[in-house]
Amino acid sequence: MCPSATLAMSEKSAQLRSQGIDVINLSVGEPDFSTPSAIKEAGIQAIMDNKTHYTPVAGIPELRKAIADKLKREDGLYCEPENIVVSNGAKHSLANVMMTILEEGDEVLIPSPYWVSYPELAKLSDGTPKFIHCGIETDFKMTPEQLEANISPKTKLLIFNSPSNPTGMLYNREELAALAEVIARYPQLYVVSDEIYEYLVYEGKHESLGSFKNIYDRVIIVNGVSKGFAMTGWRIGYIAAPVEIAKACTKLQGQYTSGPNSIAQWASLKAIGDPDSTKEELAIMHEAFKNRRDYMMKRLNNMEGVEARLPNGAFYIFPDVKYFFGKSYGDVNIKDDKDLAMYLLNEAHVAIVPGSAFGNADCVRISYAARMEKIEDAMDQIEKALAQLH
Image (spheres, rainbow, N blue to C red):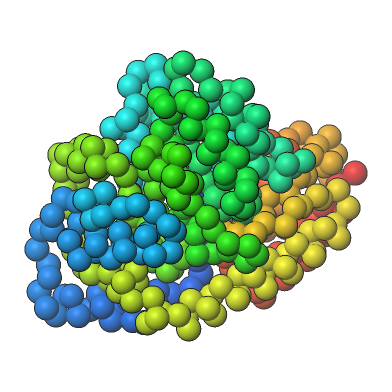
């Protein structure tokens, strides 16, 4: 298995910091905001109420019901608490689903660019990743024609992500409907719809593939509280799946982790079950992300050789930087995205992630989950460093 490139860049940044170098880290996919007060208070209250014992493997009933209600209310899904399994983060949820569904030889369709863990989790589950290249010319989105052309008798699973990490792109309902029509023609094909960035949408509206009646019984929703509620360290994710898959995931989870952290579940119940309690704080976070995105887009598109498309969600920009391949500065030669990322780390002291980690070596991923003053400094330093390349 390959190590996570995002974590590797973070470690390199930490090494430079330990040498006294001030590195601006724009490589990590984590909100820089604190968990809203009402959620923290719910966690504290759970401790005071001694809710510190083992929980049911699939999650506390109150949280499973709140998730099912939320999915029906906000996303138009057909689900009940029996369809819900709560896990130790959305990555754990993804692993549960793939280990449950996949057998050796099964193909897993992964639109590229993709989140770094998708292919590794597929391989860990004996699946064979099959990538569908989606370039900047389609805003990194998969077309129905591309999807259908890549389905074979061995295809068992499609991993879908909107809003996307690393591109931030959002599929609209018409685009999803066209994909659903293709999926409906292949009854052996399941879909994992990773919707972890659902609440971080700046234009348009998040829509779920699971809301389409012609495929809803083959779509497994993966979501969690980490991004939208700034709860990364609480480690709560969940699936909404057909009952037989939910039961299989519960059986699997019961053997290797059991139920998730009890305190984190009660805090998550506040987040999901009482959205009004966090509305003001999350609105501030949402507005800050949008303002940072707009500023970063303006700066990047004013840099010669950088081509960036406006992302509608998440907190990443995925600019095309191949213009700089073959250029140099002093003894440094830029052969590819990895060289460019390392050059910017050493020369500009800004950490980003090479696009090859996400399946597109023409690009790099830049996160705007950092304070505006840090982003301003980073853009100044990146612009200066890129201008030195000839």
